[in-house]
Image 1 (tube, rainbow over the protein chains, first blue to last red):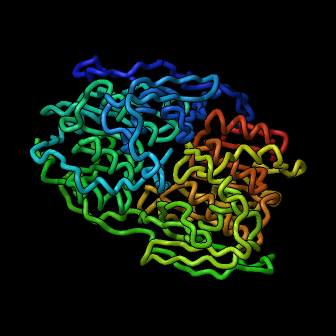
Image 2: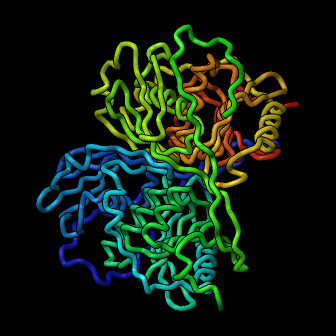
Image 3: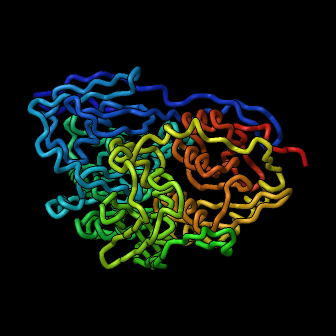
Length: 283
Length: 283
């Protein structure tokens, strides 16, 4: 992943390892002509998350941003409310473990781990609690706007971004982009074998970089299912753009929280599904 | 989903509701030309699984085959070893619940629910236990073969199959097909917002229809991640075909169990990754 600078970082920054795994591996395959070729395939690694020595779950991940993934997972599951709560995040690929040490322990971890929901989206899904619990409290900036020019700028930048997907496929990508007038700039780009890992890693890196969601656009290659919309909303991002389609619950939640959601966005095509008031279609 | 006949059904067939939900819903969207259109989107519904009144988890599903999904989920998580253990499966969309009643209760449910793994694949992922536990015991038929003609026949049938994906996108599809000489015939086809729901629903319907995996081909639109390969192996299916790519763990597990795995399969193109000995490339 590429993170931008260190602006606005929290005073209490956790100690981090930096243990990204190689993204792709070559294997040999035989094609329809009988030719043997080396084909790059995406890495997939189990990574067990421990919080204060307590095992939470095992994520299957590409391993590109394991520390940000662990932080973002805890953020998006609302197990941690602020980066300041985290003292250290240490990834050890020998044991396939990421150990998160908190400063004061996690309150009501028991309660939050009581209910499990597997979600429709790719990847890890929602494990603990009901993400809908907090959705009523989400307030997205009413005055934020997205211009069509900025949307097209974002789509151009995503298209030309170097990706693991282009090499190996079998991954989903998520991008966090600035939103200024007619321009959008990718500030974070994460790919993972599960797209919920990708969105969680972005959520984690946003905390590490002190990035706010209100002036950003969130782009995903994946489908706009309920959980994807909820996570973007919880990150405070008013604009959600996807190359793919959406589900009924994704649509209903986006309407409920007043998010501007754009699907089937490629090149100069898109479908604006919700939050039209924020979208400036006129050049 | 379309199931074929009732051959080989178990003596103790569970009582089932038949509560499929509508697959798509129309919403209005504005396209890049400013035209408002009705766009079909895929349904997505929470469905909480109870086994003998005990809450197991909530699945987010299209709802096309909820009874088969519940059965297949329990099968693929190895919480139920045989259909005979299940007395009734009742779906109630009023309460978004599927109640599974077993004949004798489930042994070691506690033990099996101890570890949670979120997987790379789309959808619900692996919730309980470690799917790798049993993988060593999987034996796929060594003498089974797949001809290139049958592969192409399958790809043609999948391409022409009426799908929710073609209407609404945002779903993954899985197909179970016969494998006879130069021909393949789709016997089960399931789509869901999460592809692991789709594979689980097929596993459940295979039990209900008494379908064996040894003489079948499993096709998925989704990526060949570790869990997808493990589930196909546990269903005893020696041939796994995907339109998409694969991950490193998917590749390693397919090799370990001796599965013939073919990725990037569309029209007359494919990449044969593992189990080449079983594939008859010559016409």
